[in-house]
Image (cartoon, rainbow, N blue to C red; front, top):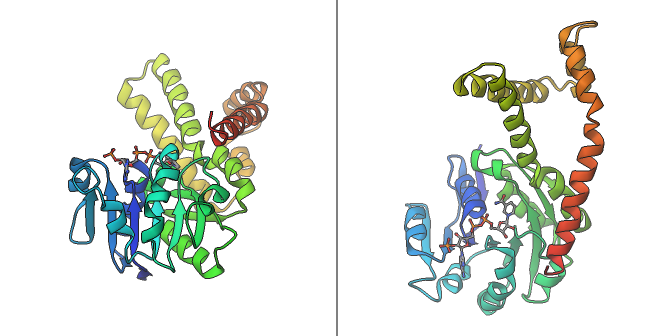
Length: 275
Ligand SMILES: NC(=O)c1ccc[n+]([C@@H]2O[C@H](COP(=O)([O-])OP(=O)(O)OC[C@H]3O[C@@H](n4cnc5c(N)ncnc54)[C@H](OP(=O)(O)O)[C@@H]3O)[C@@H](O)[C@H]2O)c1
């Protein structure tokens, strides 16, 4: 099935903007046009293709203005601190029906709506967007319509799953799915270290641990069975896994995750306050 999208501009096409671009150019997605910008010429050159016009502000000071002209969706992918200046810059060039959507952490819809006319939405994708497995939270603005929300949802669905949530929940979502890949990588790192200490080579440890995370995640998703039930199926009464799980339960992981996400939430509020 082909997904049809309107003309799109991505302003700031680095790690996250680039990940979303990879979804927009994949087979089965047809955007009317795609224009992306970056600061450096080298980065811009690497993104140009038959589907993508790629501009650099280094050589073309008006690159962002050129990109938003004719664009229905304008995705803001620069660092949070740069968002207000960029929005001031592009405001006069935005099309009357432009839908502006930012991926910047901590920059509120109210801040953005004060700087540009028209429709503004906010989103929080995560890095598995690079492999088409993102989870993205999308929040509508006070001036965006359901149709505009649907268009933005389709854009992020090119790189994974989308949850539409109220803006008040964006920071909380970020502590789960935004930061979440780091939690998973950390668990992988620590279990890999244990495998190494048990005498396995780096490659063997990586095969066991990465393969187990991938296999367990696929089993979870494809079976549709509750994770607690899947865990029970691995945990025979009086068996070895039961002993290991008993030790993990002593580590009070739920409380640890509560504290970790609470710490991330405090930091999100600090960042939003400009600290
Ligand atoms: N990475 C994540 O996991 C993640 C997750 C969710 C949300 N986000 C959000 O995504 C945004 C970008 O983060 P990132 O990690 O992708 O950063 P990044 O890789 O540094 O990307 C930012 C890009 O903006 C470009 N840029 C700088 N000034 C510009 C200008 N005036 N006009 C156009 N482009 C300009 C930079 O180009 P040069 O490199 O050439 O200077 C760079 O490619 C942030 O707001 C962040 O909060 C990131």
